[in-house]
Image (tube, rainbow, N blue to C red; front, top):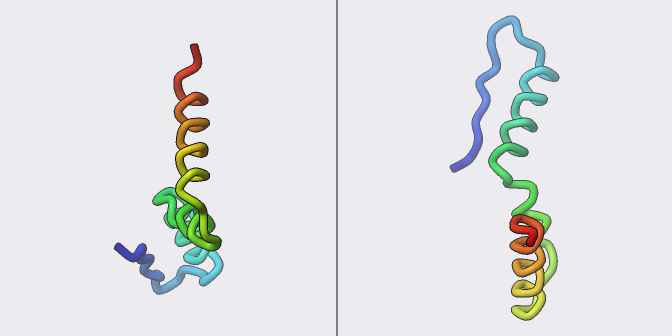
Length: 59
C-alpha cells in the first residue's frame, strides 16, 4: 500500500508533494517508520500500549 499522487498537467510539483505528505501522515506511515527506527524491548512495547490505553480511557 504505497501512497500515490498523480501530478496534473498544470499543477506545480510543490503542490503535489504537499498532497503526498498529507496522505502519508493520514495513513500513519511516518509514525510506523519512527517506531521501527530503533529496537524496542517487549516490556517497553507493553508499557507504551498500557499508557496509550490509559490516555484513551480515563477513569
